[in-house]
Length: 238
Image (tube, rainbow, N blue to C red):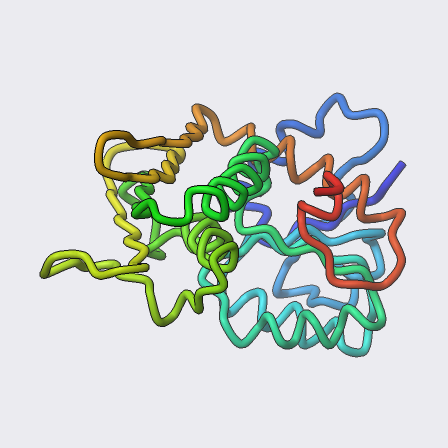
């Protein structure tokens, strides 16, 4: 049995992962981080750590992992400089980062990238919808999708992305629109628009269990990998 440590165990995703592991025959939650006992005990009682916490929490986790190598599955969004830390640490341990652990989203990302390259003259608009409590905007998943469609056209996302349009669109512009309301789990649409026709690729998550089940599958795959920095494309062999 794989001993899984949950960092952010009392959050929405942490609780959902625990629920989906109740009848699992291959893995179980062996440790939940407690600031009173600290990282030492948490790491010792885990074969692999799943992190759905916060930007600050992830930074602290990575800092401790520098001297205590352990397979890490990071699902926290809103990160920036932490990516450089992850890449450096991945030389000593397997680290998997996913802004979204849904397998359906991984396929959407793959298809959107292909469509972007083929429909090179089409305008691209990305719409993401989430519940009213989500803190980051645009979502990490929307940014991943935007980066994929931009790279397919050899574009630098930071130079072409627009999140608050105030004028007519420009050539190569990629717009990312965020909507927040109610209890929407997650919906992402990547649209390709041309005069006379358009194509929209969309994924809707109807339950948070989608992400929990995906994270569990990833953990079972990651525990078998050598040191390296992995994404869901590596697991699905895209």
